[in-house]
Length: 249
Length: 103
Image (tube, rainbow over all chains, first blue to last red; front, side):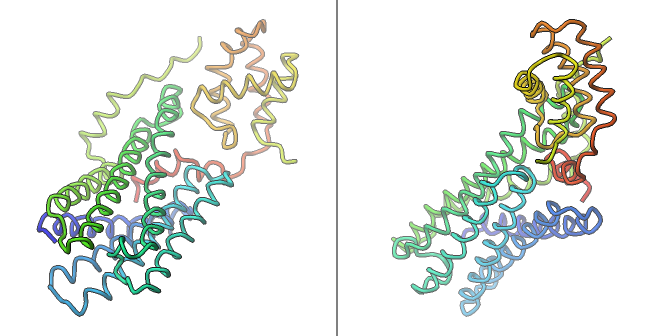
């Protein structure tokens, strides 16, 4: 793996680990399922990044396959929690959303089981392992869903801001959430090209690795703005918000 | 059949305007949507804002006279509305995303 991709992975891993941990702590206080679901999801992704980066950093061949496999499991379980968060936070009363979460979970687990059956433990053989595509599609759907929900909620939240029912900063978080979902879906798409290229010619594309490293850092920046918005950003959003409608006389 | 806050408010709107059930529910649904809200997760405070800021205009468009007193009457009735479930306010997107920055 190229250096920029590695650094992007380390930054993203540490960040998700820290935010996941703080969200789990928040859920302890708030006793609310969405906080816990998102916290576990981020925490597992942080662990997954560690599983990928450690063998790369240490160039430890015997550890590569087992750690890559464990990282893959952490990623998928994290994705299932992430999809559950999307369901509970955006579509709590919706039956189709519940079934979509089940479908994502079953597809991810079936994909891993099928990959193991054909000996692709690391998930790096999309050309010879059809199960890889089941996993990939489920992951892409989960990430795209996040983006779609963010972009659906954002215009509605803008109306609520005008009514004085929503904080402009909360409204902006829906937009950032939508962009994060789209960025992660693009990351999945690029990863698919990288992995198919790796199986067909045995090399990991450096330009695509740079793009994905950049997307990882950009995603971290977006999530940072959602969780820890700096003062200048808060002031900017408050200033740019649509004015609330005046009270009726 | 459980009665939601939306059903309660629509029923009161029907009583105070002489609208049919369909007209009352349809008018309220349009106003709720215009405010960027979901009928299923409404709170009393949100409905209050809808009746204060949007409903007078909606009723006027539908030929209702003295829209302000009609809205005031429904808002008074809302004070006796069955309490919204705790779940509806804690897991709605605004509350979830408001809490995020407190992690």
